[in-house]
Length: 111
Image (cartoon, rainbow, N blue to C red):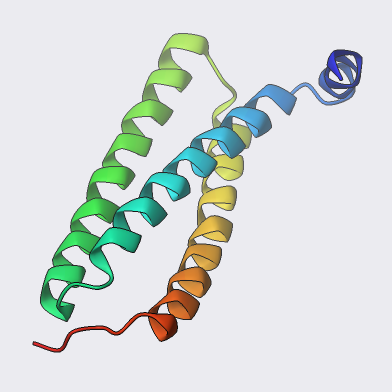
């Protein structure tokens, strides 16, 4: 496996940025899904507060990590930002689809 990673790294100089963008987006969506799964059975008002609050905190956290990696480790800005936010929006779509299917299974309280 390590040899395969070295091969891809030699083949594409931006491979590290791609992997780090994927890891950050994956961790972000896993945290978001866990938070929203717990908030889903609550009232709609509380769910929206938790949903937008966690989205805002996760987005600011992602931007801070992005800036630190670019400034401290001198990642290529273009490839890193595009890979990070490409994965971010892809996972966001999967998160919405997952929560939609989950909400149909759970009895959601009305305000």
